[in-house]
Length: 287
Ligand SMILES: [Zn+2]
Ligand SMILES: [Zn+2]
Image (cartoon, rainbow, N blue to C red; front, side):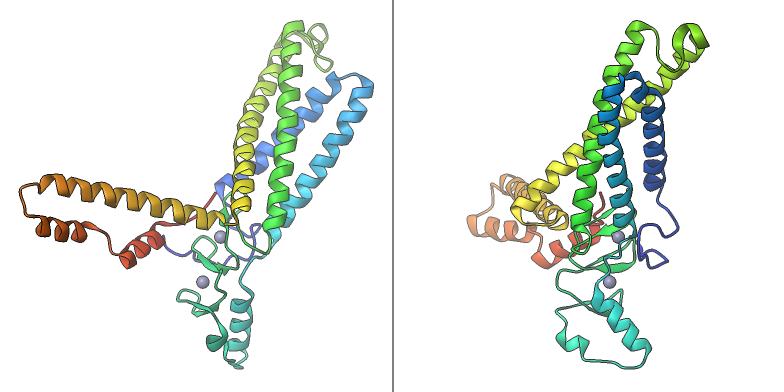
């Protein structure tokens, strides 16, 4: 993958990513349907309790979503190095640094990785999130995790409530807003269709985000990043494939003498350097 033409500092910088725009529209749509059609169907005491919980979650969702999107997880060494280079005060960063990025052309932290989508090195790289159009690294991982937990809570709440209220509305053939008799059958069916679309979107979002939250709990317990998890998974697959290839070669060469077989099997194994290079080229970690 070619590096992006621009060097991204945060996720609210143009160009926006299609999934990011979709998430905004989907979020606005689902929340509008929930506020306009679902909450008013509850009894007054329930509306007060539900609205308080929902408003708190919505506030946290907007706040954390903005913080994660607007955060800059760039490796501070690359920023300092470029700044000082621009000012002509070259320091001994090369000697102090643990790694060097050939794309940024400067030294970087050991845990940094160059993200092709953002075209910058991210410190403590976890993954590039297409939904917030930003890299997730050590600088913004806590906010990111809190954000996905809040997204999960609000979507689970909306999914359950929309499913429950929507079903009751269909069974009773009435709603507080349209009122079958007041506004007519057509508006009631139109309202139901809008609610069903929101239910599908919320169910998909709740399922996806719950899986994502569990995944991040799992890798946190293991003490690894998403990037390290993907690397180890790919390595296992490569090893399994090279193992299968070796077995096939052994079966094929049954007629050859033992020494020759062993040397041919060795030739089939991908050299470690080549394996790492292949993985580095293939990987463009994004969730
Ligand atoms: Zn870089
Ligand atoms: Zn990125």
